[in-house]
Image: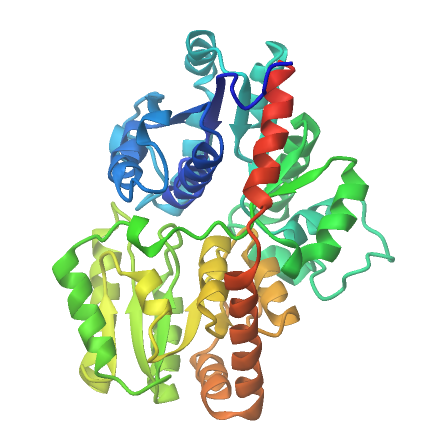
Length: 459
């Protein structure tokens, strides 16, 4: 009998048009091609996304054979409000994200041509592209969704459509308050429902579900959801990139940040970062700045701004400049470009990580063993924040609906982490979980690779 690990397998990956999603898919591609020497992956995205991927792909070549991952462009329709350089969520104003989703979904004909040209044995797709899975399955190409959010969030999605008084995990249950946090104010409940419908539809279109998680933190949710949806959940593990495979950005600027951090006291610095896609409105930045100032703690704040909002961005930058002027450059550092997040999180002088609770950021925080201050902004982030609290590795900053928080609440939570016995226990829990993650056997990718072989070989 032929060895399935010797037969050439072609997989097409189609991540959502966010750099965080693309990087997560690329890391999975690297691990899979390292495990399966007979695997070729066609990594499909817009030119602006692929421009940032190329450098990452060829860096740290010991991880993978770069030639086994082929970058494939999918060109979307150009419009006046959505030119090619905005075919990504990075710097994209929030009101244009639904437009980007719509334009991407309208590329069905282009995607069909790619399927006919590449002839993949399997499609791995993201939760915003069920249309791609439908097209693939119509042509007898198996499809598997790779969901980058927590399994806890997926469990909540199921409970939303089939609410039960017996939902066994009240600590993470979606409330009306959570849902207001999880969607754009202009979309309301209807927008949140549509988001969860996407998740459920993706399960239905998948032969199995790939989840970026591991049993040490989500065993009960994994077993619960698998039973509910009647699909196997195949895990990737934490899937944290090696520090050496992460873009170094501007090396000189990164070294300035690390030198500043080196000069602070041990466990004295709060790292504030909200990912590459979440942009904080001015009134929220004002409250966050107030909280950092009142806390008395040192801080590094990575602030990002949407494009096409010059007046608002200038006001925000003036706010940040005023904050640093008041507290002094020895206490506060503001970064408005790329920051070496992984290196910062692993630094001995870091006290805590104030995060929007994007799942990649949460996993990096877990891996570093840093207590987290949760300030969720959208989508799955409110549930991720609840999971952080439930695991005892962080605390959630009080909000009364999306973005409705006060500087005093931010300050109180920072002081709780830095100055209380409870904060000490959170730190111990975070460090113990980090030890578990670093010492765990990494069988997840091997198991996933075997599942992919089995499914693709039957095609």
